[in-house]
Figure 1: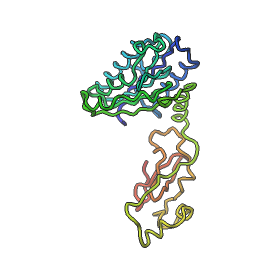
Figure 2: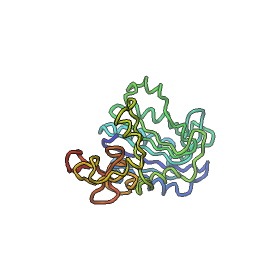
Figure 3: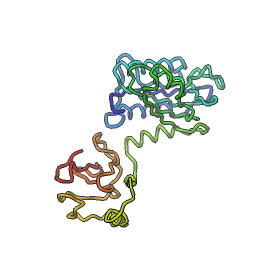
Figure 4: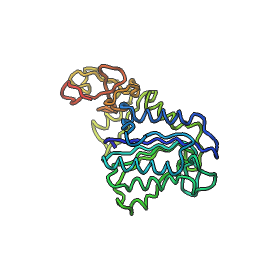
Length: 285
């Protein structure tokens, strides 16, 4: 989902279930990250609507209306909608109910049915897709009914990415999911990157088998002038590179590189790039 993106972040307090400390701060931090050009790259506040709603005055009707309106605006521009729900969640069978400011405990008619709301979004004509971030207890129940989507208005011709802060039977604590997402988008992930495992499509034999049978310590110690390094461009094992803690939006994240996880750096440490061709010394992002 690399096209234009719209965003809606809702951090609703529910006095009947207890106020969550620093919910408004977490919602604002997540909104700032999602609208930052180097992170979420979502469109900021539109003159006709707000993309951030938080507090105890956000009612059930306002949550549902804001989500539907955001979906219609995104569909009108053929964009992806990123919607985030932060607050209290209660399970109801296989459904998740999001608590708003006027919600009542154990009364699903006064709460937001997240799965049903996502299904309505996904069936909106023109919408390029939905990225849903759910940071509540029992967030694993937020998944919409896939069978209903397959038989809906768009007959399943839609896209959904659902990120949840807890399992279907798990509680969430201190909005850790939202805070961690903000931290990862802003600072990256510490530790070396790991090349993706490669499996041969057929049983190797002869020189190929001998080459693959060599220890990884031998394969990852190519000399600069060896045939693997190609045209003298520097070859550095990916294990020596951090996992992109920079703010360059064009820097590939954890690029495995050619030839069993080789990568190289230029200009700034921490920005992996790859050679355009092993036969020449040119570089590309």
